Length: 295
Image (cartoon, rainbow, N blue to C red):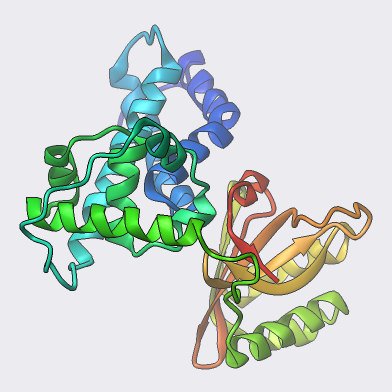
């Protein structure tokens, strides 16, 4: 086996990835309509970039090269996701997509991720691809692997839904945690805030998996227990149950900051009443920017 020595080029690409990670994430999140899914896309893109760099040779515009990889990775993600999401109805199959005036086009392009997340997946993807990224209907069909009538229907519905959202009164009821999610998240949060980490360890499964995003991954109760020990050494956190992009989540605030905005969030996955996965974004604070969160 031939060992390839570490080169300055390899070091530079890793350093560039670290520096560009927030910008690349914003781009990926915008393309796929989710800060959480955008991080998944970003991680895939970073792996592809590291693997492709030796064959790429001298890069005249490494930032542009990285954005192209991120762009193509996001398109692959959209294709996979939309193959899994069948359009429920294509009643408007014969309709012609309405042409937007310049003002409305700019308004849609400026729509926040929080608003896009309220659209069903196919509608969200269609609107983002055409009205934000400037893709044609043909390109939308290729990306989403769907028929022209289906793309037209999704685009029409998505635009109509955005208009309805824009017209909603300020007192529209907000989404809330279900009673079951609030109960189990509440128990986890209460023990964590009380630094009762023995009780937390009792809540996690033996084969629990931890993704400390942008930092490390741990597997099993023994390894993950070190994660709780590290939290016990610092005091820059206070946990609150909430929602992020409609998903039950734990919002983390800095008690000394006084800012109403969370610093980051944590996602838990459950199996048989135990915490089976932990995804902690402490070391990726850029994730919370643009995210829709509710307490």
